[in-house]
Structures are given as structure tokens and as C-alpha cells.
Length: 168
Image (cartoon, rainbow, N blue to C red; front, side, top):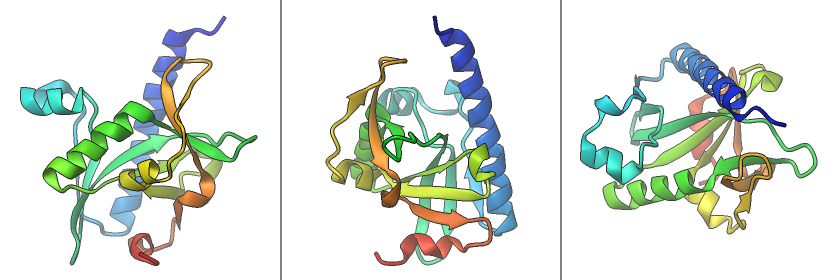
């Protein structure tokens, strides 16, 4: 039997770890950012209702672009299908946020297998545009979108953030 409480605590720990590495990556590249604290008291009731408690982790500032919101994720690849799971409901909420307020939301994924030195980026809108049928996890019973690895922009530790906007 799976201990969901232990798994949840481990996921929280891994999430904080990946955010810490992401901060270091941003600092290394002199990218200005604001870290968005995740406790519910830091946002208005209206904003919390709008995003149902989910919110991005960072707001980064990019010259000549403006700012984009980043949700940093600790995810491991599904070795059989070469996909990364992204929460279906969260992705829909971010899409609504983007449409309503004209704010770009991106996911940035890494893990210890990537040494937290490679980041896989994808805009929220692209996740939905792929038209992939959402699935239900056999473990958590939550809905997710399995995004194939070839849909992400890979940015290595020494790459520039400018790579995100190549081939756009």
C-alpha cells in the first residue's frame, strides 16, 4: 500500500529543493526575479479564488520582453513514454490567468537526474495547444497532461535565457 502522506511530504521537499536550485540559476545569470511566497496570506482573497490556491513560483524580468511568471516543477520523466506530467487543472487555471491578465506563464522542470543544471521550459499555452488528452494517475488519481520531452526548450546551466525565444 502506498503511503500518500509520506509521498506528499517528499513532493513538498523536492519542490522546495528545485526552487532553491532555480534561484541559484537565476542569480548565476543575473536575471532579476521576485520569488512568490506560496502561503495563502500573501495574496488577496479574490486572487486566491481565481487561482484556487495554485500560483507560480517566480516572476522574472526580461529586458525588451517584460516579465513572465514561472512555475518551477520537480518532475521525473516517464521512461516508457518519454513524457513529463503536468497538472491538468493547474494548466487550465494558468491559461485563464494568461487570457484574463495578459500574463505569460511558463513551466521550468528539473530534477536530480538532470543535476539541477538543465531546465526544461514550456509555455503554459503550448501545453494546451498540443491537444494531448489528459490522463488520470493510477497512483494519485489526479488528472495530468503527459507532455513529450521534445516539446520543451532545454536550457543548460551555461545557456542564456534568450534560448527560450529562439524559433518563435
